[in-house]
Amino acid sequence: MKFNSTLESIQSYEAGKPIELVVREYGIKKEDIVKLASNENPFGCSPKVKEAVRCIIDNMALYPDDSMVKLKNALSDKYTVNPNELIIGAGSDQVIEFAIHAKAHQGSKVLMNSVTFAMYEIYAKQVGAKIIRTASREHDMDEFYALYLEHKPSIIFLCTPNNPTGDAIDAEEMLAFIEKIDDNTLIIVDGAYMEYARFKDPKKAVEPRDLIASFENVLFLGTFSKAYGLGGMRVGYGIACPPIIQALYKVRPPFNITTLSLEAASVALEDEAFVQECIRHNFKEMERYKAFADSKKIAIIDSYTNFVTLSLPETKNSSKIAQELLKKGMIIRDLSSYGLNAIRVTIGTSVQNDRFFELTESLL
Ligand SMILES: *Cc1c(COP(=O)(O)O)cnc(C)c1O
Image (cartoon, rainbow, N blue to C red):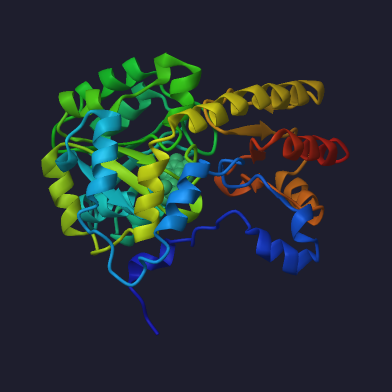
């Protein structure tokens, strides 16, 4: 059967291997597997969230509240924005999909960093858009501007902190860049890890309220999958001026967020102390990764997230190292598909990190 020709150049997204698959493929016991591959919060979510979800477990027959009033109100309070400046997606992934489908089409150009979140390219190619990438590994705003002038893209992605490298753009530099871009170019600021950057360095903190107060062409993305420990619930959001939100609503399917997910995300916002404690722990453990990398003379990228990227020496192949670790029940991310001889490791609990050091020690 023939499918749309736009699909021909798309490589399906490869998610971090699920624990269930490793149990089956390698015959390792579930309790012996450590997954540090998808930047989930190793402590999960607040106990208050679990309690709240248990309490509404009898409400599954009815369709969810499609106005999402409880979650929108909670997000408006958190960010001091209006509910009509918000859209909720099944993960911020879905908001990326909405934005690309609303703005780009066959022949449009989409500008992004050389190494960045893989889904931007996949959604852009679905509509036949052309991908333009910078050459430098870290977001270089001058290079972005030069490529903007040359190609006049319809969408620009800025992922800060960036996945899979962990570096972040200085907020001031980003604002100065956005200032120079015309109103008809949609700038998507993906802040999936902004909670971590905000904690580590105020210079990297981008506040969605400030963005949308100054610019009508910016869409900020956030998610509950990382710091809030709700990856399994699939909830993310976009914040932008009402005309952008209204356009995204036109491509949104109804009831895109389940009742349980809406409740979980709303209640997660009530326990900010839990999230901040997880983030504090994250950066404390990150120091151990730095020490480990130093002792092995491996380059580590300064990270503003909940993962670290280790650039391996030429003599060590990242795919092989990832494969060896997998056989021992340690799931991490090989970055060879991004053109890097590097691995990305989510910072886990101290016990999980101990396990990573112990297993990797023997391989390096
Ligand atoms: C994880 C991630 C997302 C999306 O996560 P969802 O689970 O779909 O909310 C978006 N952008 C980046 C950079 C990410 O790392």
